Amino acid sequence: MIKDVDYYIDSNGNWVFTATYHEARGFCCGNVCLHCPFDYEAVPEPIKSRAQQIRATLSKNKTDAIHPKN
Image 1: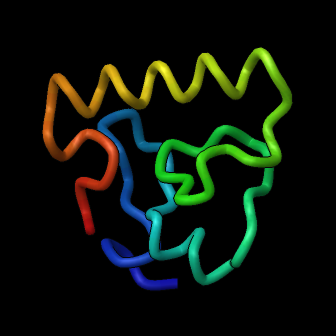
Image 2: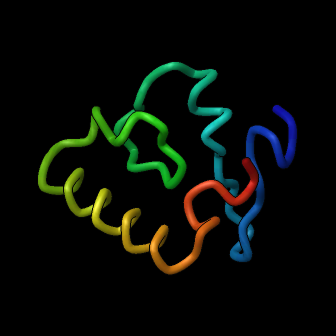
């Protein structure tokens, strides 16, 4: 894995996987990943709908909220 390509470390010290990493993996893991390019297809309801709402809100408030490293 390559830092700032496959992942970055957020302000809390957590590893955050990028959309590039997820796309290479090829499927949604169901863990409500911030940069899921598969629109949370493996996440059960109602968590899926809530995650999609949060993502939409973040992207309205900050243009790079969803894919800051892509």
